[in-house]
Image (cartoon, rainbow, N blue to C red; front, side, top):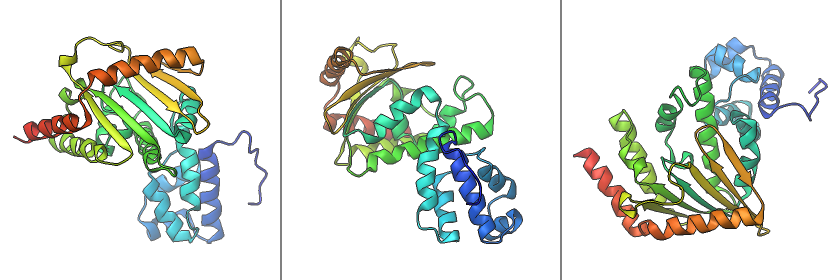
Length: 275
């Protein structure tokens, strides 16, 4: 593209921004003209080109159509979205994106199941992003992009165990919570996904107060465990550590409601919410 680039140091966001600028200049368009043609704000487009902002994937789809570049920008965006996560999570995200089997426990609504509005509310809390509206939007875009792995090719087999607590701590917006419950209900019906609810009645369990747990199995049979609390995440590949966490997860699965009863539970919460 007419300039020397250190590909080992260039981030996904920077590569995407550089490509956006190249395509605009190749088309002979100024930022102002592009803004008029696409209805996107000029300053927003400028931040995308400078690699300072991660867009929603739909923006890249629009610009791919505008430039006639197939899915070039969407593919670059799929790489760039990992820049929305902190460095310590990136190896976990890489493994998660390639996993054939995923088992997840979450005390709250899992990020992979969150709607955009629910994610925005959750990430707007002071203890999460804490860096202004633009940082929140970047985190939301990254979280929405991460959800694409549920529809990957090949499609992964995913089991969610969600604590009842997640359904008792509602959104501040009635519509946001309604949409969030509908989202969980819909995904629970996908053939590659199992959702189980861990009810309060199950009593004490091994992950109480310890955050979330994810177990990932790759196609070659290798496995890792990942635990995440409020401010830290630990990725483990030692077989003994993975086995220990797998046994903990198996205990939770046995304590949780079966999938059919879990779906009934979700629908009951939705009905109560609407009444």
